[in-house]
Length: 301
Image 1 (cartoon, one colour):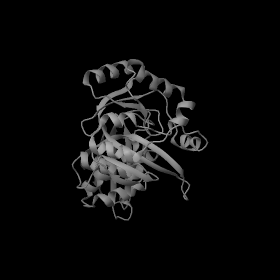
Image 2 (cartoon, helix red, strand yellow):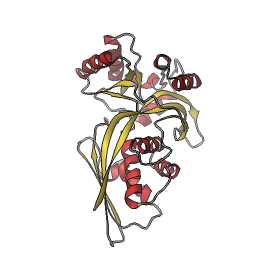
Image 3 (tube, one colour):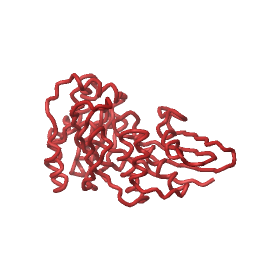
Image 4 (cartoon, helix red, strand yellow):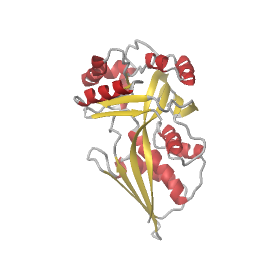
């Protein structure tokens, strides 16, 4: 049995705007995503045989992670196998570090890792664009995860770790990386339904919207001050009202230092902030861990 371990990296959203509803029923988005150093380890093993069948197993080291067919990584394996005459067993073992149902695309990261691993194990030699299209079959965030994980695992040319995502979030425009920028992530002990948030945002009052074009200029200039001041996620207008624990986590960020500008990632509940000072980042991380055990000091990569 051949096997490979691929790191699946979490993402954060530096901004999210919801522009309306597309003809396919999905929401039209304009957002900026960036990979972080927080990652899962995904071991994919392949044993070919003559059974004429493809069998897939998925397991994780945490009880809150679905196994088998309920895991997006399972669907990623099937998507890679589609149209290929493969017979044998795929075993997927996930060591989780990315919090579940957190707005960090942890499932998408694992899915991307499986796609990249099978490309290597099967020797398919597919280019990055093709792998991203396969990833889209399993979720809108997966193409970005494939591009980022390909780059960070040094597995494919053309990968990127920061992008503007438009349409339903799957159409990507690469942007310069802010690698080395320190961030603190904190997930309160609650899960948030992405479907619920997007349904709820349709009737929410949007207090402020991000200036995506100006934010891109700041990213290109590595103007961390402007980036911090203008990270806006319109989904907060629903999630913060419906999940008080998320609002409390956001308040915890500013309780220690009022100059910190936290923002929610994805549909929540994880809140994060760019913290450029190393000592300040350490203090903030330690402070938040007293409330939320799933708090991490990491960085953009």
